[in-house]
Image (cartoon, rainbow over all chains, first blue to last red; front, side, top):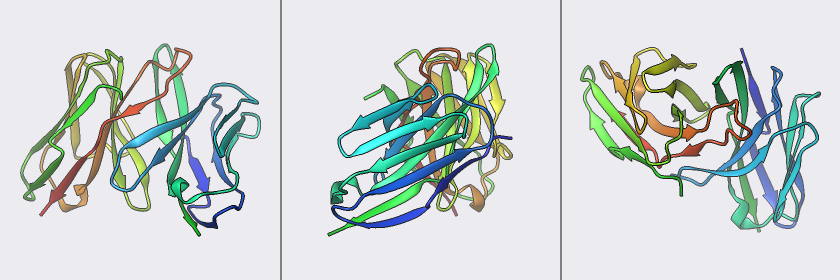
Length: 114
Length: 115
């Protein structure tokens, strides 16, 4: 059974600081996704990581994937209040043929304070 | 935005009644998913479909059934609603995992309250 663990689950940061959110998973997979969710809203796709060593950056967020360590990180640089949200990682499990699905972590609730 | 519509968006129902939630897509994606979101649990997969009439159970399928008679519609039925099924339900769509990108796109969610 695939387990996806994010940490921390809650993160309070000051504006201007850097921090990293971790996503560990228990089964081989080389596809990982990061999503953002604002309160009361749907999930918005942030990054798609499709291979070992993949690194993607968008603004103050950078995501990376190490499939050998079964670890993805979401790094926040010089946080601003607008980044306050809940961030989810999701790992794809593939059964063969065209069968598989996405398993999500519990999410990291990020609060950026002035 | 991906063309995904969930209905209803909000519903209050009584314990023991059947409830059906609908997810409609206009993207012709093969995969469709139903997740529930609860505080402290993140998103948990209820059922998913990998084609018309092809469905499988997820992590928390007890008390739920699904049907997919057309590519564009995926229905989630709570056979006899219980208070533990009070939650926010999200539908998602994606291309099959064998493709290069299985990024999932989410609907706006349905807030269901069972009283």
